[in-house]
Image: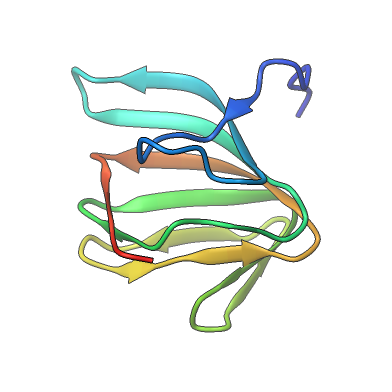
Length: 110
């Protein structure tokens, strides 16, 4: 999926920039409360612990992503986290994911 690379910006959805993570909003629809964006993890980047207030779904486009329970997702995997689920993830080798998200996630203490 060509993205131009230069359009990605630091990932700051929790009010702080997360090191090694960047995103490219494709559609942020406040009226329908539905966001669609590309999320890039550089090698070693880790997401902030968070709770899903609504379902989050994503398609692994490139690389691998390991969740806090040890489950590893790879390119081609389609993943769904149910409302109320809590987790964080790390990408040892970097990855690119297409995220479909309803509602905001609630950050948890790291």
